[in-house]
Amino acid sequence: MTGKSVLPRTILLLAPLLLFLGLAYVVPFLGVIRWSVTLPEPGLGQYHAVLTDPLVQSVFIRTLRICLFVTVAALVMAYAIAYVWVRGTPAQRMLAEFCILVPFWISVLTRAFGWLALLSNRGLINTWLQAAGIISEPLALARNEFGVIIGMTHFLIPFAVFPIASAMRSIDERVLLAARGMGASRSRIFWSVFVPLTYGGLIGAALIVFVFALGFFVTPAILGGGRSVMVAELVYLRIFQSPDWGLGAAISVVLVVFIGVLLALMRRFIKPAHLVG
Image 1 (cartoon, helix red, strand yellow):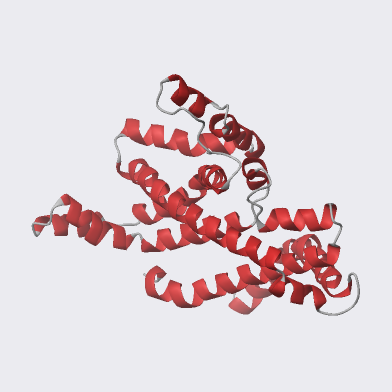
Image 2: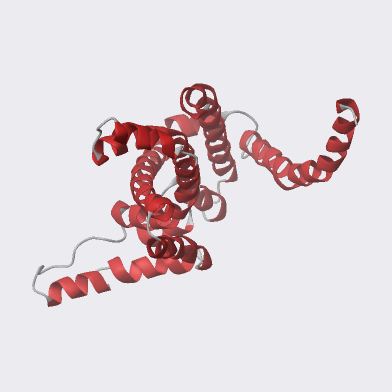
């Protein structure tokens, strides 16, 4: 079978999927673009508002700040979990796998309310600390950026574990044995050999976490308590409560374009440096 005959069959097999994706995502997004340039009146006024409105700018800055904190925190914890999952004892691997998979069985709404029960002023953490005499007043752990970061990080850690664990499993043990044979200590092997060999997984995990975090809605809405509004919640408020469909659509388009540019930059500049084996 020649390559020329395989190509048309591949296109035919992919055609239903491409058609579905086009109807499910492309067509609605084109409608959002149309709203952004036609509501409340034709023109680019809504995009000008996105670039100049202090409220919208503050929400974008807050979103980027929270996403960066969440990405760093999720990567650090995911790396530790992935290390135990890949290189630990059988019992440690089973425990790590349990911790990775169980969160997928719990809805994001349930997890958000669970963290609210732990972090609120009358939550378990503040209650225990006050009962132990460690603090006299409740700590502000929820309804702020701290609570949002905690909840988002907890949700996104499992998504970061998989690419990191995949990179760890692809490491040739002979490289580590060679470093050990040359007299390198365990810490030196870890930081100078093991970690650099997992850069590809770290970059992939960072991209997944950051992109997912940009579109978070439920967790910031519950744990932020309206005080740490992120972009997705701002879009919801503009479309369903203002209502200002044009501005909400323009914010959505800017967010999608930003994610597309981010993916393109990661593909062009970071992949050749770290991901090509």
